[in-house]
Image 1: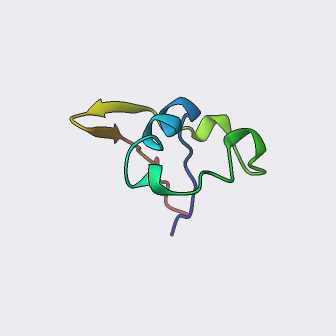
Image 2: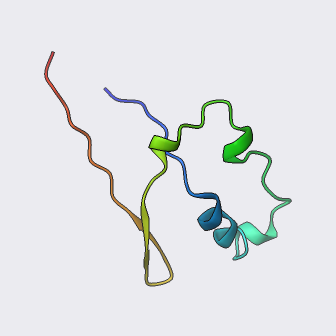
Length: 64
């Protein structure tokens, strides 16, 4: 079992929040700079894909 957290680049997040449905919300309350568990190495590398973004992750799993 694996539990992890991924983060998004702030510039990409700002662009996403300009479009619906996110633009209809009050706004964000957490940013990478003030997130107590933020880790730059966990920022997901994204590319534009049609009208959205594509992120690919891979995990190296080793049996115990």
